[in-house]
Image 1 (tube, rainbow, N blue to C red):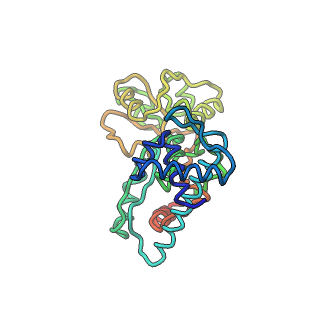
Image 2: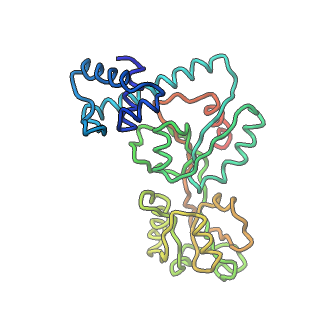
Image 3: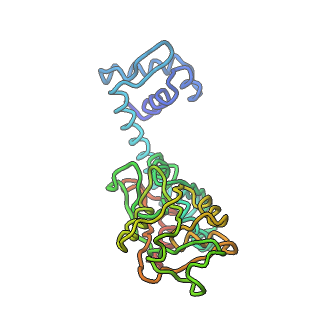
Length: 298
């Protein structure tokens, strides 16, 4: 079995049909069918269940699919690493970020581009689960994220560096009188405030920090809305529907004309931030250099 056959097999697994796979590979159907037959004969197992033209992976085929993807990823990364030996920092750098960390990127990207103008960026935004998938499929190399990183994969798969923690603040409509003119508030004053919580069905870590801190002060927060979108929550705040508790850096991306930020006086609970990447993956020179731009903040 060779690399070429693994690519053929993965194309068939993806398309679920020999005809479509042959078209995707820009080859004739009979040679592709022969290569699949040779693989199954060499392994002594059926890799697909046939139902007319449709093909579904067997249990053995599913295992081979996982292994083949890993082998080809490693091969591609090895070739990239070798090509980079005599090259400077250049090429496209693909990174991911949760929305609540987007405000951390502009200054870093600007500074990075001043040092390495030959690097271009691809930036994908999503929740932890989505970004975890992007890392697994090699669509991105790095993730800028709130911690813990709540992907669907074991944390042992990731390398992680911690960035400076981010204090929480209370965000409320300008017309509300909470905090008076001091631009500050205590946790106990939050007790009866209607709050919007940043939370999804899959990522709850940030909200849990807020809820647990309220419990430390002896009360349950009054949650009137749960939402996975920072932008929607802040639109509701502007409309006067409620307040929210957010990491302070999140607000750097939003104009403050219609909202008010209050420091929390009697607690210093923080949102942890970090950069994560796959432990077993080669990082490009540009990815390593981008990580280094954060080193002065650590």
